[in-house]
Length: 115
View 1: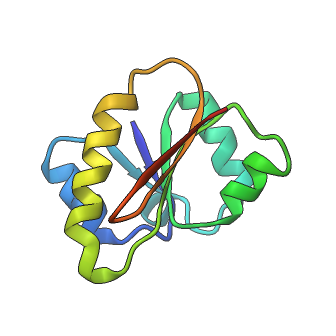
View 2: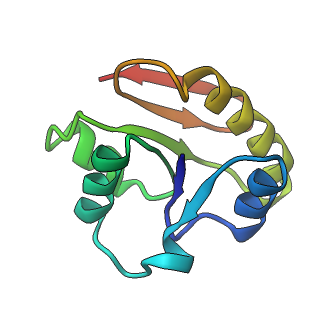
View 3: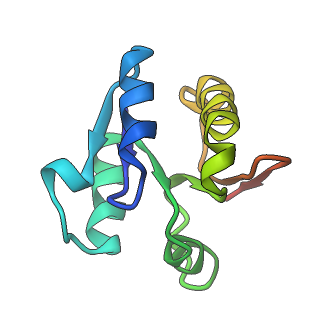
């Protein structure tokens, strides 16, 4: 399952749902919960987080929260369709993959860090 942080554009969430992905939206179901609570959800549900929040990078790389699967999106509105396409590609490749990772997706590049 995908957990969409509350900063994820509703268009992205709806597009993923329309394509058959199971997406739990923090904005719709648990607005205002802390990043650490979201990390706890990821572990309990073995889910992948999509976020635009740089704080998750800090939690992973500075504070050693390594038992997570995170996809960090960086884009501007005009690149939204390319971001969704890249997100689908990465999700299909990594959703069942063992291990933990932090993946950054931009319109021009995808960076994968195994944790």
